[in-house]
Image 1 (cartoon, one colour):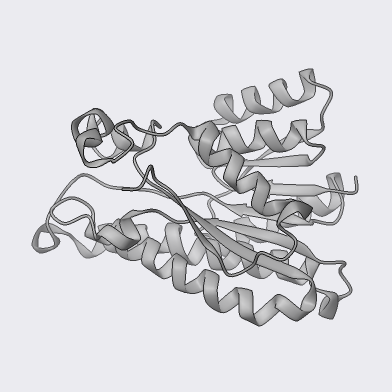
Image 2 (cartoon, helix red, strand yellow):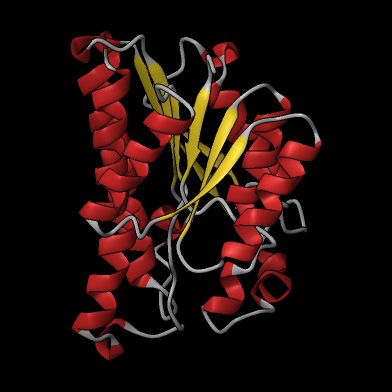
Length: 248
């Protein structure tokens, strides 16, 4: 395959929507998941039913050994990577900072930040002209929370996404001359399962009054922005933090 894409956390929500859209645009898609094989398999089934190529790969992105195994499997099954979407991430139950445990904080930053670093590292080793690659694109999934801070809810999550913004800026400058573009999208209130995992399944409905567009966004709307950033249409776009937030 000429265009091979890895999407971490690709079995549900924004990741799944991105996988399906990218496959329709000709990417062979590696759908990473951690704990829901049936969801990842369904994304792969839909891609293949549409004539595309895909495989599901289990890996915890916070585990370096599992990240290395995942990239090796992609090399063997699909070929050299040209695109990465760092989408895997977690949120926790709403809490103030003075209620957060060290274990919670470690999990948050291990997955949301270190996992993105590890996957980007392996992608750069394959894409960079410095390493014999032919270039590529990385899109990090940040959050509007990086700007808003999420007080009394998820300051740890917001801080992890702030780190992703900084990571995007620094890595983009680092590899710009090596054929790799690095950008981020910052979704706002999007209708996905992540709110339920944080104990607030009605969060979008309850906060939609804060959104100037007066509605939550969809995973498909975020996927459109991600796939555009991956595409040649964004060939001079790098180091950008693209808000997909309805003006919130």
